Each structure stands twice: as structure tokens, then as C-alpha cells.
Amino acid sequence: MQRPHTTPRNQDTPVAAPDEFQPLKLGKLEVWPPVVLAPMAGVTNPPFRSICRENGAPLCVSEMITARAWLRANRLTHLLAQPEPGESPRSVQIYSADPDEVREFVKRLVAGDAPEIDGIETCKQPVDHVDLNFGCPVPKVTRAGGGSAIPVKARLLARIVRAAVEAAGDVPVTIKVRKGISDELLTWQDSGRVAQEEGAAAITLHGRTAGELYSGKADWEVIGELVQLVDIPVLGNGDVWEAFDALRLMRQTGCAGVVVGRACLGRPWLFRELADVFDGKEPGPPPTVTEIRALMDRHARALMGFFGPDMGMRQMRKWGAWYTKGLSGSAATRSALVRVESLEEMHAALALLDQDERLPLRALEANRAKGGRRQKVVLPEGYLEDRDDDTPPKGPISDAEMAAWEKALGGG
Image (spheres, rainbow, N blue to C red):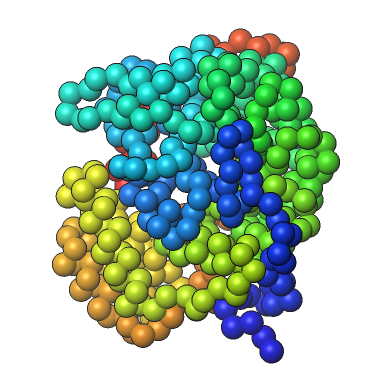
């Protein structure tokens, strides 16, 4: 008898056996199931993290927060770094190519020492987990020597990780990386060694290079190779589209946990399904359109409450497309949803759908947020001439550029 709610490749994948998998241990944190919501720029803001936690996500990482902008009291940066009331554990991902900035930022996050900013109540809640971004492939970031460009220089990478770990004390610090810049410039081995030697609690490896972006198939084999290389926990990232993919990834590679990104866009109930399979239970059926409408209403109201009515509804436009992707006859509805300006317009567009339809299997791997293109990764001029150089890049992104970029990401 075929399992009714999985793709063919997972039909023969059994749910977890008793004690087959262990909780993910990150310092004093114990995460069960061993699943993490990936940090995603413009996505993992407080409203979405709250919805994912309600659906069973045990550790939800903030979107990338720029150390320099936070330290200089940029209003939007602080807003995006805020936790929801009662959010626990509080997890923040940091972007910076400067060890001194990282040290100061982590020190203040751990102490709950946020600056005072007119117009918002800055968060004084200490963080429980810090993640360092060494995987961002965005050209604006790599061109300045940040994100996935940093592991190219292992000594600089080590300085940044060391600064974070020293400033964090007993708060666990993890790092997130890609395989490398390209197939000709792989950095994952150096990243694993640095993470272990400098005291990181774990390393997440996305099984693609920066040049691949999100194209093709994630390389799970390299995740297994990293597990064999280091003694700290390795988290696998890439192509976990449904709950049974997470089990297959952990069984195939021996990794300590999985990081879920694009698959949960418009599908936060994926975390409930993940919790079920790790607890040895078959997941229930996907939601109906009526249930999706109720969740979208909740999400839209949360975004409006967080960003304000206008920006909140602009944010909701992309979410409307993600929530309805794969539903029968949804093209016209999505076309309307990407232009909505109010809750009433959103509900009117959704009313055109069959309210009893359940999300079909074909929607599991429907393209969400990222295309299948590749890119030539742009690095700072002369960046590869001395890979042992451990000084921060001389041409970092300016405050104005980063503020504009974060506004675009946060504002939808």
C-alpha cells in the first residue's frame, strides 16, 4: 500500500524507529526534533518564526542581521533582530567580515545590551544561540568579501569564529557555509576544520556552491564527508522538501540534524510533519484551502502588526504566491495576490479557489523564491592573490548600501 502524502522517492522511507535519532545538542541547548528553520533574508522575521514554532519548529534562526548596522543603531536592522514576545530559544544570525565587529555584536547580544532607538522598543532579551553567515551568495555581499567569500580565506574565517566564540561565553555559536565558491574553489573542508578548532558548537553545510545558488541537486555526499572529517555536529542543508527527506538525509550522511529553508515557504506545517516522522508517526494529510486561508489571515495580520499595515501587506504578497503554489487553477489567484493591498482583497482572491482541495503532492517541490540559474561569483579585486591574508576586506558594504539592501529584503 502506497503512502498517500509523499513523493515516489520517499514511498519506501520508514518513519523513525524508537531511539534511532538523538536530540541535536548545541552547547546547553537540546533541540528535538533535530530540525532548524534556516535563516533566510526577507523571510525569517519574527511573524514567520512564530508561525513555524506554533507548527513544531524547535529552533528558528533570525534572518541575517548586519553587525555594523546593528551596532550603529539602524532602526530596521534592530526591528528585524527582535524576537517575538516569549520567543525561546532566541537565535540570531550575524553577517560581518570584521572580527572586531563580530566580537562587540555577540558580546552585546549575549548581555541583552541593545542601544536605545527612537520609535522602537529595542530588545533586551539575551540570545540563546548565535549563527554566523559564511554562505550568502548574493553578489553585493561577496563583492565586498562577505558571506560565502569569507571561507576562501581560512585564517580570516578563524579570526571571526574565534571572536564570536570568545564573546559568547557559554552561548553556542554555529556557522553556516556552502561547499565553496565553485567546483574549482571548494572551501568546505577548511570551514569544517576552522569550526572545530575555534570552538563552534556545530557547522551547517549547504550542499551547493555559491555559484550554483539553488540550482540542480544538493550534494548530500559532501555532507557525509564532512561528518567524517570533524568531531562537532554537522547539520545538513539542501533539498529537504518533505519530512521523509530529512530522515533520508540523516540516514545517508550521519549528520546530527537538518536545516530547512525553501521547502517551508508557504508550508510552515512542514515542521509538524517533521515532528511526526521523527517521533515515529505517519504525518497527517496536507491542509485544505480553507485551512490555508485561515493561516494566511493569521500571517498577514502578524506582518501588519509588526511592519505596519502598508509594509505588512506588501510583505504578504510574496507569501500569498508561496502558500498557493501548486493548487489547481491558482495562477489567476497568485496574480491577484501579488498585488493585494488589504486583507479583504486577499480573501477575495482566495475565494476563487476550491476550498476543499488539499495541497497536492506536485506542490512539494514547486519553485519557491529561488530560480534554477547559476552565477559567476564576484569577489573583491585581488581577493585570491593572498588567501592567507586575515585582514578584513578593505571595501566592505557601506552603511547606506546595507541599509538599502535590508530595507528591500524586509519591505518585500
